[in-house]
Image (cartoon, rainbow, N blue to C red; front, side, top):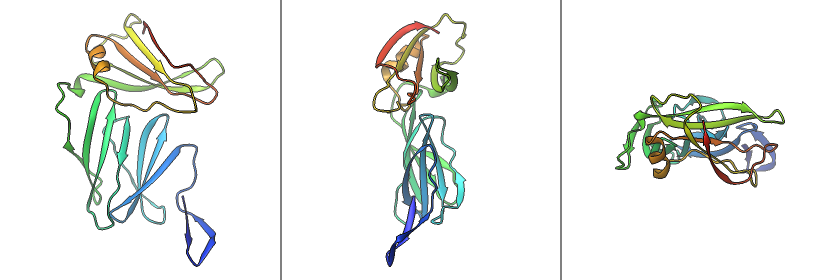
Length: 198
């Protein structure tokens, strides 16, 4: 992200330097909110208008976050968060303290505390380090005998980001594992759903 003065639009100054991660910027409460997608999960940083880090926002877990936009005078902002074991939930964020609290969550008969969604990494055949989200019910013995759905998409350099699904929740509740590798440029797979053993 760059800035320029209207009187000299050819002179640009970096505010948020470019990185290898996808970036989107929103504003609210007199701050910038830099939302990055790294290894297919969200990371959010609160910055001042000069790009100085105020804090990295502690999200509820590894998943997909959106929002953080508002007016300059706002004291609080709102954002959404979801992952494979968390139904889409709205959080209220206090700009001064950096604390979040649940503002609204859907009425779903599903307790995220009973499940695990973790990120692991493995090496593909060509040596590429590939991140993968694995979600399952707590207490599951990972002994290689669990029925597993492996789902991935490898077209157009699009990454699948974590999102809640009732169908996947039912699968995990019945002892299944749900695994989603992230697409990499050098690691291409066709859209598929495979049932195997974890």
